[in-house]
Length: 448
Image 1 (cartoon, one colour):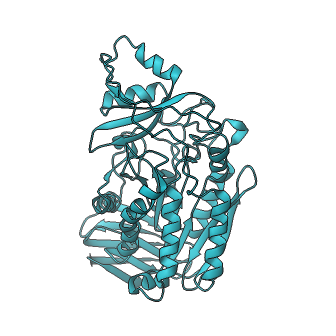
Image 2: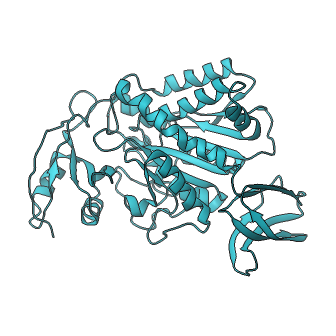
Image 3: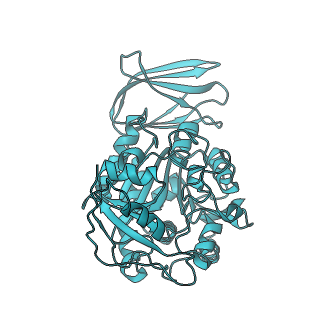
């Protein structure tokens, strides 16, 4: 039970031409009861802070009055200053993202190519940049995918992806580590995914989150098939910020991502979001605490340590979230995927550009760099003769219990990321072969 205590600080009121109603960023003490109350009422939770134990939500005047009317409420609350503000116009809009992509390709044509992976509801092209030493060739190399802005108001996230593109292309040939990554990895970056929603955010509603379906929008990151509408982790209410849509993969943006992931089969993925300073790995629904591969949780912890972000599942750190991209990627295509939520409470969705942009992208570089380096870490990588084998079963050495079943890629390649240890491998298909007692402390390459 909660008793209402009004610890009122500074008011942050959204007003002006791009906001249709009065609303407030409201800060509460972070605890399970508070998270449960906000989720049960479908309030818009905007971020958490595990260092200060705070949780923030975007509330209309009506919703705020609803909370105040709770007879059993014990909500200590505040209005943090300047969080509910319009975005700084130095952040990129969809047109500026397209210009950036074209300029990069024109400047570095030998190591980049640009692919239209689909179109939005309003006909905007969703662009992906490939960075590779042979960008026009599908090489038998591990692939890494990075994307930003499933949610339209999270304007810092394309700054991470454009910084990554700029860093890799500008340092190729002069930085040995970058050159090795580009030469030995197929790197794909989707700098801005929710183009329509971001356009609406700039021109109509500075707190817009979804795409623009029928003016009410669909939360693209609750629209993927895995777990869709399975654990009260999304809403059927079209007005809710986490409205999941009428059916799994109903949105063209979702379909574009799904088709693209199926075509490139990435080993790793990062989906950038804001704000909370957390690293999320599958699964989104309680009680699925950890993935079947221990490496996923371990790598999430490693990234969290490098960034000083808290790692965990969505339901542990935030709330149940069904229909998210990383659960679908992990379950359907055995990608090792993460959501990284940049910035935190007190910074919000629209931090001052000159104060926060460079600080944020520099802090986040070690996260995506770690995944490139981890491709050289404990793993079994290689290729099989096409059609001879279709899956690999992984066991602890001397054990009959299957730790993981890995589906070999259509081209015969495999990239199995593991924790350090000794394993047995069973290659199965029209033929069969076993590798036993393989010590995995770094990348081990085999051809079967």
